[in-house]
Length: 65
View (cartoon, rainbow, N blue to C red):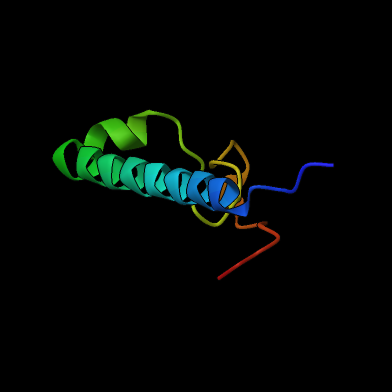
């Protein structure tokens, strides 16, 4: 039976981390250069709550802060 190639697996994990980090940096730069396009893209609010609907102005939220 063949032995696992841990060096290859580690390299793949490192490459995946590097790619993810570069994507995050690229996204941050895009948001810095074009802040209005990031909010218009339809991202959810950071607290995870849905965007304000018709009854949101009444103050009946489940998570008041």
